[in-house]
Image (cartoon, rainbow over all chains, first blue to last red; front, side, top):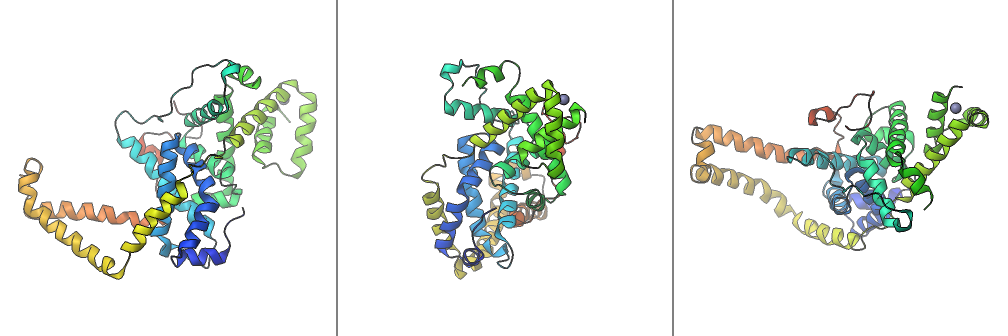
Length: 185
Length: 157
Ligand SMILES: [Zn+2]
């Protein structure tokens, strides 16, 4: 993973505003993408992204500037993601993800945005532990051992979760009837 | 290699996790098994969709909004603020205790002042725990929130 350099990370730790801007610019795509994959809606992903950067900034003295930045940063991000999922559970009737089921659409009408919605919807049918791993792999481009470090589990467990997660996603995304329709697009 | 093993390797391939010798093993099986070739197409299609859905559309104002908010935090994080927080918190606890019979009479009428104070102390402690956000929540279990974490079924019902 190509992250910010250690010098920027140190400046970030010291509260340098330019360094914060660097961090945001470098990681906003990954963080927003993780938010989308984890939480399933653009609004939630946006709130999530803001919260991640603000928390990171607020808690920057917890980061050891002698060590790599990404494990600390993504650990914080994933904790926030879990917190948001947890809060969601506390609201009655909201234990399912708030993404609308996309109606079957003829190929002609399947726009790029709709396809992304389908992907997000398929992701919401997965258990959060699989979504986490897939998000870190596909959005943050982390390697097995990096995901393991972020989540505090073994690389073998990460591999199993990624595999199962992709299998489950494939099942959901290409479920009967959909695949051949989607394929034409 | 049977088809079940092949499916695992197909998934690994899309995840970029295939190791050296496995590439040839998988290709050998695929050359002999039409079912797995079809499956491999589906996996490639699904993985492609996952990659394509990568966030290429970050809200344009995101960075500015974060920086603006961070600026406010930055301003607040002066020494005075650091000293003021505990003082304000303590004052709030006292005020809440004093006012609790008025505002929370229904809930706290049976509580002694000490119990009310303890309840508020717990709330403040809980708020303080957010500081632990940088340490990964290893004790977190989805089962606690009604989500099964068994390895046998991996799709939410
Ligand atoms: Zn086969």
